[in-house]
Image (cartoon, rainbow, N blue to C red; front, side, top):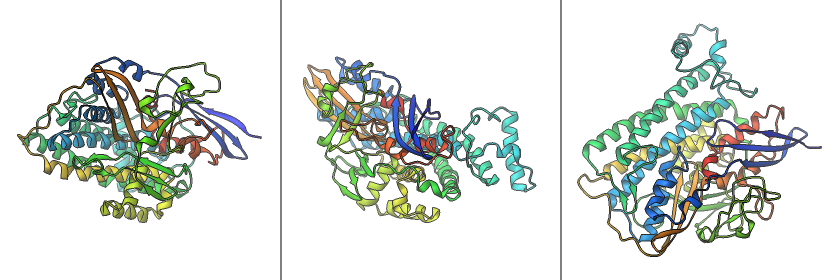
Length: 505
């Protein structure tokens, strides 16, 4: 007979997530993801001037505000029938790319690595290796200066199998601290062209307000080289070490098998010309994206179900906290009625199958060879971490091309007229996956605004047909050595990098 266990809260992620699991014979049979708060951004926006939207929606998240700002100005671009000049498009890419880099580095080192790294190795090591002695000395200095602590934020933790190699643990701990500096560096890159971070004031319909200068280009490139070195010499090697030490996690956390991406980092004004392409991958078959097939189900969400099954342009967000049978404040987005996983794994798989970028195919194959895996193994806990690290490197490298295309003294903004009525969809990719903002205007005011964010896709509840969401499916089937100590489930959850603050916007 199955027993019920609750992980509440799931720590080391953004926002408030509770996961309820049913376990029988050492295996999870059912999982339920519960978003535990309601924020109401879609109601806040109704009736406001539409150019408030990119500032208000950036407050949905402190980790990926840039992506929300980009989605909002893209929706307004479409509604106002304006597009940015080349400099505006490139600056948006560079600002969003820097935000991607910091988010991916922070996710691995500060949120997920502690699921694999044994912090107690620092306290237990008694060997005499010169390299290890140097690393231990470095860690001890950090402890003495209280830059890191022997317990918090590393302990308490679930007990389980961690990295056994002391050198790998010591290096990962060192990189944990260095990741904080890398995040600061990436934020500085955002602010060079985005004015400030979080919550850029430079993102506007028609482009971006910041001007292109040779000085800003040189400053951005200098900081970028620092990040590229860290990604190459620390981030990717650490992910490979974890993968080599725990290869069984290429078999754990398999999701729904369907992947969706809206595309990100436009290369021109052409609708489908994005560096990471849009697409839908089902059963290994790549199909073109049709956003007309997106709808949100509400049967198990704490919202009025009369709006269930609608496209976002017709969507409503009417809270019903006491609704019978509902267990979360997340809606349940579906594509053509199917569950979809979004995120770095989805983007990399869709790019891999599209064949548009041979260098991405080559990079994926090289990483799989390094860890002894195959493409089908990417749909897993370690596959998501590997895809995220590889994407971080690819995006950082691509920034060099965008910098080279910038033209100082040329405009980064196009003028526009605010229409009386209109509508527009702002489709992009946040670090965690497909992000869409849908805007409807009436009398130059926001009549309707709906957001579907990555974690709404991934951590959605069951839909109107009772089909579990992507993370719920990935958790189901996971073997847990001790249900009271479910580290295996926590590792599956964090591989998706959930952001509940976004999902319960």
